[in-house]
Amino acid sequence: MWYHPDHVRSILRQLGFTPQLTDGQAAECHELRIASWTEQVDPELGKKGRAGRHPAVPG
Image 1 (cartoon, rainbow, N blue to C red):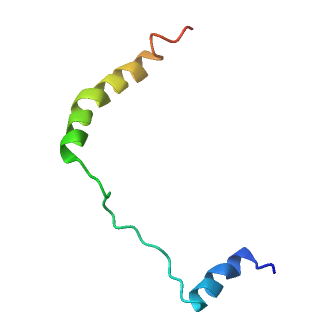
Image 2 (image 1 turned 180 degrees about the vertical axis):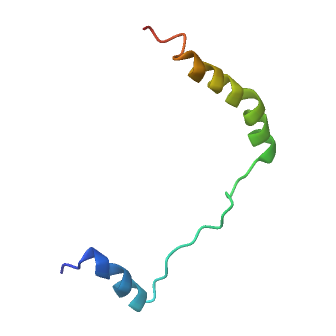
């Protein structure tokens, strides 16, 4: 049997299925690790991006 993609949503709703909604928060959120990454790694990535390319890449 073939269903048009635009009609699948209404068919699923009639069968009792509902769209899944996100919680908005990750199951594992490590605020300390995020802050550490933001302070240490993020500035280094910015420096490499401004320089044009990574020094280890032959060019």
